[in-house]
Length: 200
Image (cartoon, rainbow, N blue to C red):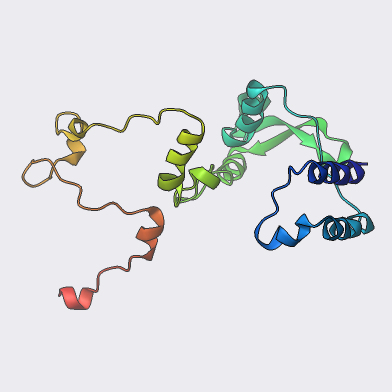
């Protein structure tokens, strides 16, 4: 059904000249070629994954929050702590996710908990698209322009004053340090370490 509706929508858009066929698709602007291009679409099964939409921004944040801000085990699952043992609720996937109690030694509980901590250098949230580190500086202003929104104000030059940011002071002379160059994370990884032989 989805395949039929989708192809019918393409035909309707083509007939109303709503499809912009340019570049490699320019030959499809001819009706005979367009129909020939649509014909093979019915010879394949379309596997469609669809689900009801979220009920609004609040539910989207709740959904994402469960993945981005969850901890290894929440407080309400903890039942008891005593005699060097921890008891907590768990779901038994072998028995239809039935709730059961599990008791572990304190050392084993901590070992399992620490398996959920990210190693140094790993991040829980990675940005893609216009927010990716590599292209954010170029694409984010375009997003604000398309949305007719004002970009956030950049920090003023006075924000680097030593009274506000003492970390920007030289540890030797105490004068404010000037930024000569900034490197992205990718550039830092590509930079080779200094040669000790030539420095000696």
